[in-house]
Amino acid sequence: MKLNLVSLVTFVLASLLLIASPLSLTNALTSKAMTSRLESFADRPDQTIRRSDEQLVNAKFGLIGTAHQLNSIVLFDQWVSYLNQRHKTYLDSKSLLQTSTHIRPTWSNTYVELAKLSESKSERDKYIHFASLFGPYATSSRLLMIEDTFTKWEKADLDKQVGASQHLVSLARIWRHREALDAMISYSPAKQRMCSLLAFNAIRVKACA
Image 1 (cartoon, rainbow, N blue to C red):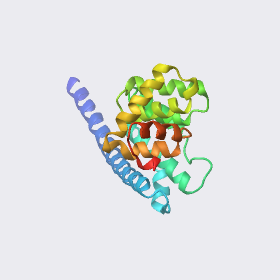
Image 2 (cartoon, rainbow, N blue to C red):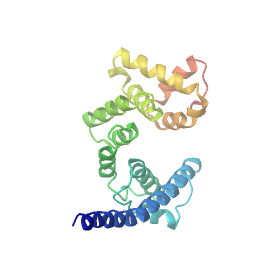
Image 3 (cartoon, one colour):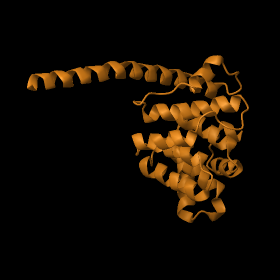
């Protein structure tokens, strides 16, 4: 009887591995393809969408999808929707990101993306807080905090103004962060204020040229 039970457990585990392995491989390949195209979109944001891009949007990660994979599909969906000039994304981005927070609750990047999609100030402030809490030194969290503070400059307290200014100058002096910084400044309503601070500190960036 005990031997039969061991055999049954072994069989079930082997079956699960047979099912999970193809799913894991499919997820990895899909994630790799999306990452490659996201890098391509960032380099050439005016390119034409391919048929394979729309197929990737409809690709569904298995139950073993990671938080990183879910975040990738959200960003990819946003790019494809933007390039196809759609007013709405193909997927429910917020639901996917919420799922991502359950899989990896302390990953700051997910809260950064949720903050960008927030429709209310209280919700946005909550996600900015979580992004800063779980990723105080993450580039995406710092850029979000900088942009938010400079946009609400008159309403921000002195400590936040000083902190955001220090982070802006610090990131601008590190070349590997320049591309992300330029993108943030270029689309921010507080662009002029940020550019003025950088100019005062004798720092020149592409977005302020």
